[in-house]
Length: 187
Image (cartoon, rainbow, N blue to C red):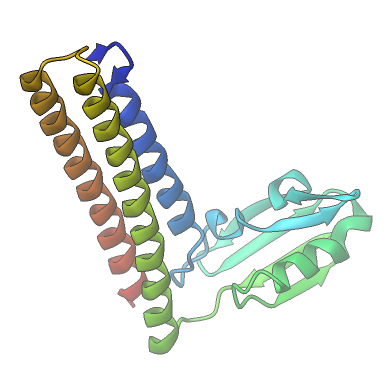
């Protein structure tokens, strides 16, 4: 529903952006299983700039607890290795030519709890982002009512719609967090 300067669809899109960002962040958290998404956040110092790992190598999962990184350019192997070590994922690269193997160690209870805390931090950042979008929407609606572009009843209805969209987005964030938490804590 769009009214002179107010579009609930735009608010939904912005909230979906916050959820997508959270999905991406959570994808990078280790769960004890090998997943290509674990290496997505890694940036490699390559050719004078920072590049995502997937632009200098192919990542695959040959076994449930093993990642294989096939570096395309022989001269980049050391840079990729360094980026993996500096990523704080706790992975130790084993290099054979242009292939880097990464064994995924079992997660101990302490590390699992740390990862859950990190997941909660990511989820809270997503909730805050959603609330910022809500605040922007409410401010816009209040201004439209103040400028007499919409009635008081419309302002009330729009505010309720914004709250419903916000509640749904927060519920989605909580669902994503619960799923990831279960994934991390399941042995």
